[in-house]
View 1: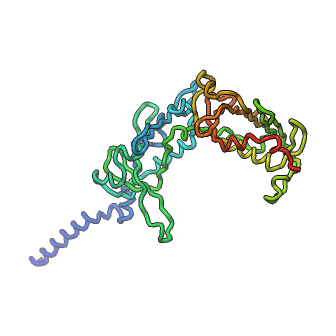
View 2: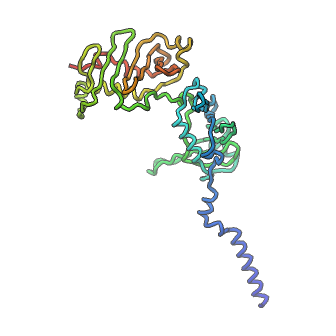
View 3: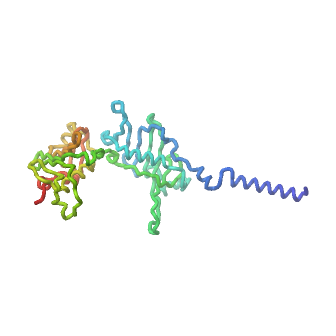
Length: 346
């Protein structure tokens, strides 16, 4: 082989080696290599890990909120310590945990610490979420920063992405898997009283007016079929589905009974303000004014209404539950229907 051919062969081998080093064909194409780098942002937050506590630190300061697991007669349950250990909304908690598990090292935005201000990801201005195991091990600490800006005037579908990073790392990612957790303790409380009750279980409705003369009781006949009616007929339509038995017998407009059921089934406390059966709670509740009762196939649900609180809210206590609540005035107004309101309009 001539010297020239040997030189050309050597050059070819060098170029081939450089190409292999750069392209790394054994790792697949560029798309495959990109996918290979995508992994969970919080790998310690595995499905098989028992979670014991979640802590949310609000953006721009403020008191942190915790949701933690406690043992009640040997059985675990989730409570909100900042809201008098009220039972937590486990659906919201599950949604938050699953969103954290869905965060990935995809859409890398920056690797520089000095960029954190741009993305609102500095400590103290971002939402902080910490997840701890039953044994007290910190499983995850993630920061949620600003919302990615986008032009929504071009007719495209909006993409909601937040900037996130691990608290101990500099890398910033964009993610559409973010679930913004409530920063108010009461929003972590399960204060929907009748979520497990279906309308088909209801048998009667009752208001007991302890200071006036507006007590009434209506009963439901589930066998009566209600036809669709127009809005103009709604106030006076009475099919016999609802009948008043106290203070005197008579028909009740379908809309009056059905709207009362709708309000009660969706009733949600605006705040948890203490414990009902303590001297402080009894003083804050004040004079008993009304008791509302929903009769069910088995048992009933009863809630007492007491004093007027700040912002026109009303103190309330639920029979069988230890906490004292505040209800919004518009829900109280829907429930405190008079006898005349609940009777058929002539």
